[in-house]
Length: 223
Image (cartoon, rainbow, N blue to C red; front, side, top):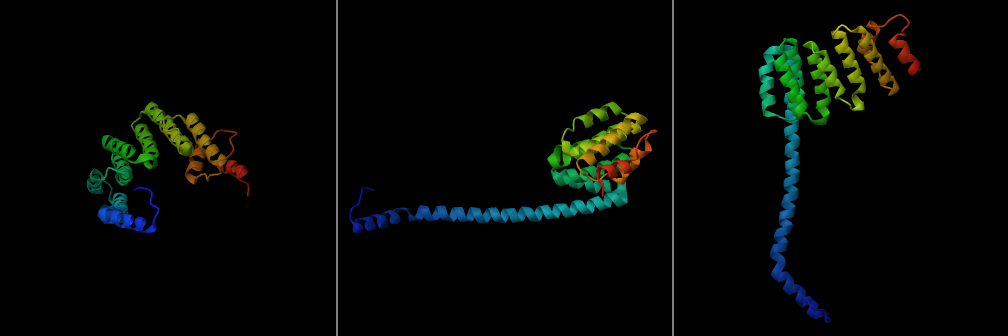
């Protein structure tokens, strides 16, 4: 529009402009509102879907815990339809059941599914499970290499403890002791509780002159 000096001319120009463009403006506003509404509905829908997935995973995990091998088929059906964190979480439980049954190839496939599809939340746990599986199969070197690949300091305690398990399974009590004590050290340095199981493992491989793990943790965290 040209520069207008008269209020009446400005008013008439605005009316003319609105008469020509009100439809596309109204359509744009409507589209924006519908988009906002659609996004909220979608978020609500996804929340409902995730709640249903979580409940189904919970039930299937309970079935695996109670019934073992007879519940694997139902769990695998869910996993095939959910290549995401929910399927990955359940896949770790399937791996444990398959490992207990001596089905190492199936357990390895379940662990790999969890590692690939679980994202940053599940992948470290899947890596620890992979190392345990390799140790169970007698491949100590592969298990150690797998654990060395998990470099996130947040899992330092778990890595050291699992490394101790690997060496103990291989009959190397000296290296197992070293790894367990490293796990205890990492935990106490970060003021994390040392689990009774880790204490028991470390105390089971102590040598003459070693302090008990309970004494170590007490000295680090005096009451």
